[in-house]
Length: 491
Image 1 (spheres, helix red, strand yellow):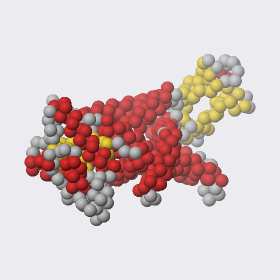
Image 2 (cartoon, one colour):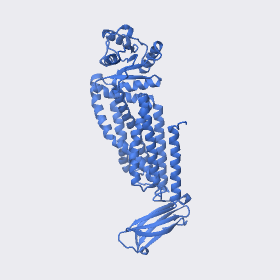
Image 3 (cartoon, helix red, strand yellow):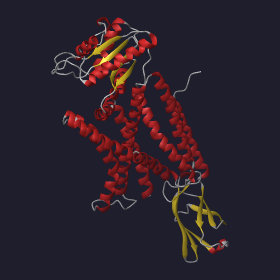
Image 4 (spheres, rainbow, N blue to C red):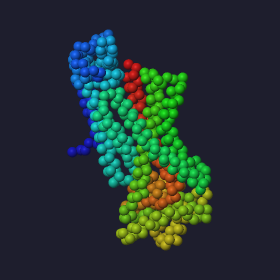
C-alpha cells in the first residue's frame, strides 16, 4: 500500500477540520443563548423587559429562564440582519448585546465574526491541526537528522517546530477559556505570535549585549570593518523590530494625521497590521536563529564515523610568510587529531586533501601552505592530495570532491574547518549532493560569536528565495487576518 505523503495528510486534515467546523456552526449556530448576570436574586422572570431593536425581524426570543442568578435568553435566527438586545429592570438597562444573523440563520454576538453557539470548534480544530503539523515535522526532522545533519530544511523544520509549540500551548489555553468566535481566534493567533517574539526578547537582548562586547574585542584585534560589525547590526535589528510596535503605538497615540483610537477606523487596523507584521517577522527570524544555534552545536559535537578514506581541510587566509594563521592551523590540527582517533579505533589511515587557491595578497596557495605543515607533522606526501584552484567554500568542496572521486568513486569523506563554519560547510556540501561529515576546531570566543552571526546571515542569504516566500506568506496571512478584524469592526 502506497504511503500518503505528509503534504496530503495536512491538506486532507485541513479540509476535514474545516468541513467539521462549518457543519458544527451551521447545526448549532441557529440559536444563541445570551447570559445576563443579575445584581439581585429576584427569580421573577416577568420582572425583566427584553427589547429587541430590529427593523427586519431577523431574530426572535424562543426561551428565557433564570439559573444560578443568571438570566438566560435563547434566541433563534430568522433572517439576515443586525439586532440590539436590551434587558431592562424597570427603567434601568442591566444588559445590552449586539447580535448578527448571517446566512443559514447563524447568530454571532458582539461583532460580525463574533461568538456563536458551537464555535469552540474553531480553537479545537486549530489545536488539532497545529499539533498534527508539529508531530509530522518532528518525525520528519528526526528522520532527516539521522540521514544527514547538514540539510537546510532541518533548520527550517526545527524553527517552525519551536514556533508552533508556543502556538499550540496558546491554543490549548484558548480551548478552556473560549468565548470570542472567529474574531477572537484570529486575535489569539496574533497574540501567540506576539508572545513568541516577546518571550525571546530577553534572549535577543542578552545576545545583543554579548555580541556587542565580543565585537568590541574583535574590532580592537582585527580592525573596523562592516563584517566585524555584523553581530551588533543583527542584534540592533532584532531588538528594534521587537520594540518598534510599542514605539509606534506611543507615537500614533499623540499623532493628529491618523486616528488609531477608533476601533472601527482604518488607522487602527494599519497600526495593528504593522504591529502583527513586525512581531511575525521577528518571531520567524528568531526561530531560525535558535534552530541554527542548536544545529550548529549538534554539528560541532558530532564526531564523524571512523571509516573515512579522505578528509578535506578547508582553507582560509595564510600569513604573509606562507605560514598558517592560528585559525587555519586549528583546522589542520583537528584533521590530524581525527586521523589519529580513526587509526587508534580502526587502524584505517586516510588521505588529507588540503583545499584552497592562492589569493592576490598571498605568497602561495592556501593548500600548499597546509601541505607544508602536514609534511612537518610527519605525514607522508603520498597521503596528501592537493586542491589549489578553489576561491571559496563552495569551490573547496566541489573541486576537492572531484579529485577524490577520480581516485575512489565510493570514498567516504570528512572535512575539517573551524567550529562556527561546520554547519554551513555541511549545508554547502549537501547542496551539491555530496555526503560528508565535518569536524570543527576551536576559535577565540570574541571571534566565534561574530563569525557565527556571519554564518547565520550566510545561511539566510543562501536560501533567501525560500525566506522571501515565507515572509510573503506572513504578509498575506496578516493582511487576511487584519481584513477579517476590520470587516467585523465596521459592520
